Amino acid sequence: MIPIRLHDTMAREKRLFEPADPARITLYACGPTVYNRHHVGNARAAVVFDLLSRMLRHVYGETSLVYARNVTDVDDKIIDAARAEGVEPAVITDRYEQYYLDDMGALGVRPPDIAPHATEAIPQMIAMVQRLLASGHAYQADGHVLFHVPSDPDYGALGRRDREAMIAGARVEVASYKKDPADFVLWKPSAPDVIGWDSPWGRGRPGWHIECSAMIERHLGETIDIHGGGLDLIFPHHENEIAQSRCVHGGAPLARYWMHNGFLTMAGSEKMSKSLGNVVTVGELLEQGHRGETLRLALLSAHYRQPLEWSSQLLAQSKATLDRLYRAAGDAAPGEPDGCVLEALADDLNTPLALSRLSAVENPAALRASAALLGLLESSHEQWFQGEGDARIEDLIAARAAAKARRDFAEADRIRTELAAEGVLLEDSPAGTTWRRA
Ligand SMILES: [Zn+2]
Image 1 (cartoon, protein in one colour):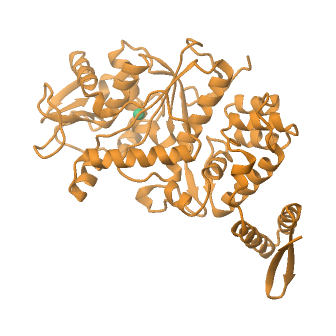
Image 2 (cartoon, rainbow, N blue to C red):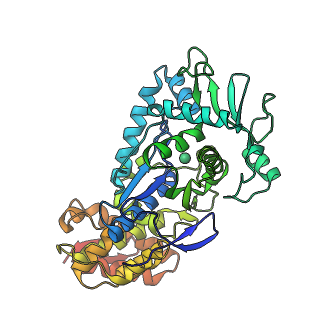
């Protein structure tokens, strides 16, 4: 069995992955809050943990993994969106969960084994809050139940931030009823016209963090093998999950390995985020005619822990790479994956190395099987190229003109050669480039 090494955020280093039970490996990734269309930065986490799940299943066996990805379907943003439209929250959450599943399907992200919904785990959350109250880690104040951060001496171990940075970084609302500014909400009251559930503390709804702790315990157990999510979830979300779970489980750790993926940036800009207004949604990219598989390859082109700069050039390169790989794979059925590609992925999902090695695989059957580890080349040769008509040729001619304009003559020649191989001949003139079939 090939050894898998994973970078563990808690340990700050790559560690050999040794599951507690190789016959039942447990993986949990924080999933979407369903109130709007998801931008391509959000999709990166889903693609990365889909890749990890494929690797684990390949190495340990198809039935060895239990992968859970939650759906946050109660949240103040959902309540606001429902109010703005004058509908019940479930109308919003059903609609955007379906969009999310469709978008992820287009990206080749397989459904997780379990997709727990927050609204289906309210009794488990209430029970966990009760245990935190009973053990002195939580208190009631002003209709809320709060986790008391100073009650957990190990709080903050994942991000290793000092207390001042955590308080500032959390931008926690300084509410007068909090004993400590870092304390966070486990349960909060709902006004009569707001979604809520009966609880020992009155009608209300859960805070965000408790849902993951309660659903992990319910579906996967007290200590899971791998917990994943985006880098922005380390604090406060994952620190809070860790504190809640450890305090109700007598100190047992929540996860044995913690994995976090980096941000997406828009070319020449900062992190892609809704609040910065520089987002592009998966839906928009698909509507523009990009294929889901092209987006997937683009998302895997950088190592998952590195920032990834999103650009139209990246998409054009990814499309060209897939065209080349589909041509090389032909109609071959998948055989055995190439050992060098597998080795690169087993080294903390080193996708840039895996993709460069993939390009060198000459045997079509091995190429298909190796690509499948990455969730690529899952269409037939015919499916990929069908509908590829004049629009694609025009796109390539435009890409060649852009390459020439930036004096990248190697790329311009490569495009000319690629088209020539398909029997498309280019003729340059002062008025531009025209083409004809040979
Ligand atoms: Zn979570």
